[in-house]
Length: 132
Image (tube, helix red, strand yellow):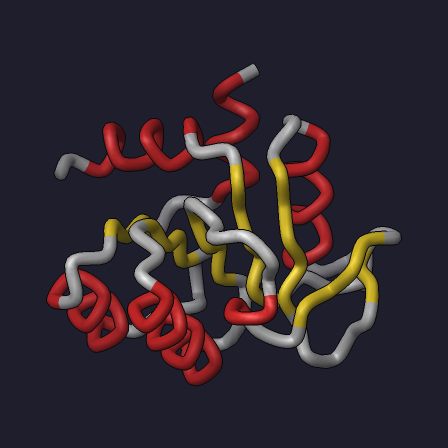
């Protein structure tokens, strides 16, 4: 699928998880989490190092989230992104968005071989701003 259409389709999904969500306001994991919330998305924070992010429950992994999310935004280093992708595949989640710097060519290949819709190179913060 062409990337622009894939981006639009993913941004139309309403339930997201942010792997790498953080309480640190300087980090993209915090900015993306808050921005998705601000835009009206149902967002779940995923980070084993936090109990809460922005006052919300923070889950240790994707499997702990009480609902099936439509899209997973990955904001972690590639070695952790690989684990997130494995979880996405195991849980049957159809969409994954790799923030710039979170993936390797091998991770993208594995994602596409598994049939997961994958956005990469594009930043969700930039794409959300285009929706205004």
